[in-house]
Image (cartoon, rainbow over all chains, first blue to last red; front, side, top):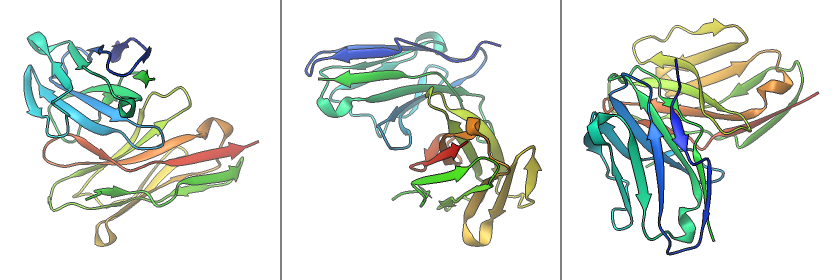
Length: 114
Length: 113
C-alpha cells in the first residue's frame, strides 16, 4: 500500500514570496491533515479536512495561508506572502474516520524562508 | 493550554539500557486515545502504539511497553534493551473526539554504542 506522498521535499524562498505544497493521502482515507512542525517542537495542526470539507482551520493564519482539497483526495497548502517565522517542516497526514485510527504521515516538506 | 506535556527534553543511554519516556496529558473528554510516535533523523513520523481511555491494561509489544494510568493522566513508554536504531525523537499525542492529534514537544533519545 502506498503511503502519503508529499512534494516538494525541500523549498527555499525569500520572505514575501509565495510557495505551495502538495499532498496525496492514502487511498480511502477520508480525513486529511496539514501540520506545521517548527524545529525543536511537536507538530501543530494547521487544517483538517474530511473529504473535501474543512473540519478545523482554527490555527491556520488565514491572512497568508490557504488550503484546499479538491475532489476529496489531493490537497495543496499555500503560503502567500511567506514570513521568516514560516520556516518549518510541513507535514501532511491522513487517517480513517475514527479517533482511534492512527495518522499516517508523509515525509514532509522542509521550508526555509530567508 | 498544553494538552500533552513531555517533561524530558533529552535522554542519552548506552546500548542495552532501558529507556522510559514520560507523558502527561490533559482532557475533559471521557473517550480519548493516546499515541506514541517516533521521528527518526529521516524526519518521517512513525506510529508506534495506541491506547484508548477505557483500557488501562498495560501491555508489551516486542521491546516496547507502556504504562497508562488515568488517575495521574500519564501514559509512559519504555524501550527495553535499547539499540542504536532507537535513536530518534519520540512524541506522545492525544486524540479526542475531533480526530486531530495534539502532540507533546517530544523527547530526543540518543542511544550510544
